[in-house]
Image (tube, rainbow, N blue to C red; front, side, top):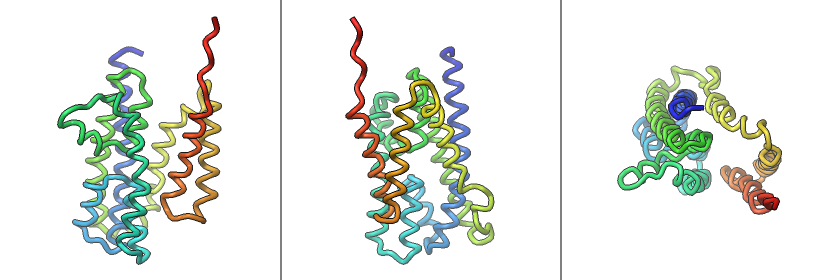
Length: 230
């Protein structure tokens, strides 16, 4: 694939992921208001926290009558994974100066997945920035739509929006677990799923995801590159 073709492919992928993920913001806006937040409070979460999983965890605790401290702790646990993306993304986008804090804000599941899906540096950078900015803008726009529309929308799940973001992310990782040499990736994915499902009924929200990541860490420590043959 040529230089320009790689860049165009990264942008197309970024646009698709941004649309799918951004639309899901309608669900967050509607559920946030239903949980008792005001429209400005819902918008502040999307603008400042900007991490879908953490935001849903936060309003889940608040909506269930939990304390603010518990809501913040639960959202923080889920948000830890975004910090783990930093060392992987930083060498790809090589952002410095004023772009560095902006890149940190835009380092989410989707932007990391698109960036790492493309080998050439220019394509990885295009994928990261287009995805990060696209998701940020659309997520906030549709958070506002959902928060303002509120009860008039009904259950957002009936529109299929609850599955849109998950489907888009699955589409990004699918080639990595089905392509050549993907046996290790399949093993890691299966192990992470088993750990997360087993722990979900036993520990607070956010912890199963973090502990499932231990599977990938262990696999990385155990796996070794084959020794070169003389």
